[in-house]
Image (tube, rainbow, N blue to C red; front, side, top):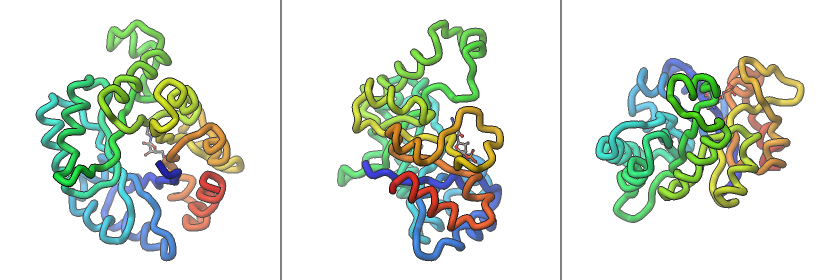
Length: 232
Ligand code: C5P
């Protein structure tokens, strides 16, 4: 699985994202489209960005009964996204159904990765609200192994967890890691961050980078710097 930088396009309208991506002339970055933009602009935003030549990670984090997830994934596969995701909490049968829905007649399919526990969920909330009493690190690794058992390609995780995920689930199990900042940049609201160079060293397969690129004075230069540090 090739290493790449994915730009988190956290914009609220089609115009903003198209204006942003139009600045890239020579390179066509892999982009992440999240719920806000997808719900605001609809599936056409995916078709339009694909037509501009970009790969798309559609970050919709599906979680429902297996049959519903299977049918929804079939629609995303037909949209020709390159990567999509779901919540591992939906259980192994849900993840297997998702893979089935994603797989096209010719056997091809987008990369499918799982969210383990959201980084916004603390140990306290997991124990009190979800009644999960195990330590959160153990839960994250268990969910990653469930994703592997179901046949998924990898997980979204902190770069700081990537090494552990690879040692438990295999070096070819993909780690997609947000929480990346330049050494001399603003951290913003992220708490545990790594630089692109450090993420490379740790073994992340894809880094998801938003504001350090989207809010930069020169986004194309910031993207190129990220690629130089991470892909090298
Ligand atoms: O702007 P920034 O680089 O912080 O953007 C990171 C992106 O990764 C955002 O789209 C954010 O929602 C997403 N993300 C994250 N942490 C997670 C999962 C996803 O920052 N644990």
